Image 1 (cartoon, rainbow, N blue to C red):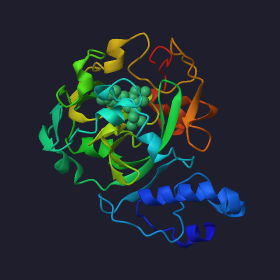
Image 2 (cartoon, rainbow, N blue to C red):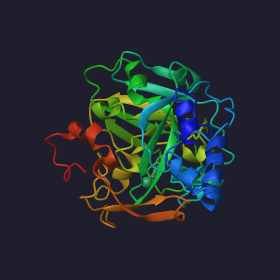
Image 3 (tube, protein in one colour):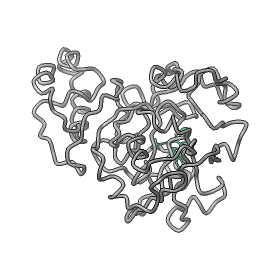
Image 4 (cartoon, helix red, strand yellow):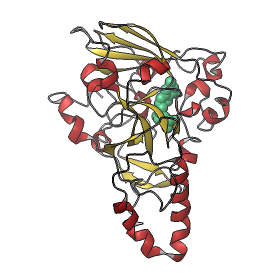
Length: 326
Ligand SMILES: Nc1nc2c(c(=O)[nH]1)N[C@H]1C(S)=C(S)[C@@H](COP(=O)(O)O)O[C@H]1N2
Ligand SMILES: [Mo]
């Protein structure tokens, strides 16, 4: 495997799902008969495709392998798509997978509005087409103290936003999820003030780590993960990564956000992963990585400031009291 890895370094193809799955089989069985082979692997990364696995067509065409990637073990596809938070489809972790089965994320439009030179309604296809899809492997840290490592397909949010030429009044970007109780059964209950809304300061939105995801594990985004497009902001708690986006608005004032709205003492606007700021109901100092290798919930690991992305984003908050602006 190690040899294969170096024999094929130039592949910019996405690591396809069946390679991940095959790799998982290899990892599962290799322990029994070939520990040396396993050790030779690039442990826990998807950078090493399983030997001789054919590369199937991707729904995205060519996918670039982004340098934005952690080399930690991936959370298995089964868990990424079975253990979700998406209150539009129910509040239990297994609700979104079950209750989003009928959801059809097509046709899909996104309204671009507010302080920008270019505004209007764009089809999902028109929005996505100019952007070369890339695979980025990010940690997602939920405020509930579990985390996953997910190979997303998408592109930089900033690249998309720049197309609309935000004006100097665009200090924040506000995002809104589809509001359609007929198609999103969870919205028939008032557990949140629908529609789900999120926001970023414009410099956070333009930071190259912020991405719009349209897929994961080489496939289109599953409904329960936010089809057809959702935000992924890896240095913030998971709830900032809003799913099923239908509106992006450039605004001058800090916009309201769903969780801050419903429990302001628990959820601030910034929501940067911060082990030093305690959630009123639980510590944020550690997390359990969801992984089948070590039981569905792996052992506890220390949570890192900014979810480990401090090198790239800490400067955004220079001089700010991050306890106050939590
Ligand atoms: N519209 C919407 N987006 C949402 C949520 C939600 O309930 N509704 N849940 C958030 C939370 S709390 C988390 S942890 C992540 C989970 O993403 P995943 O299910 O793809 O892992 O989605 C976030 N995005
Ligand atoms: Mo979350």
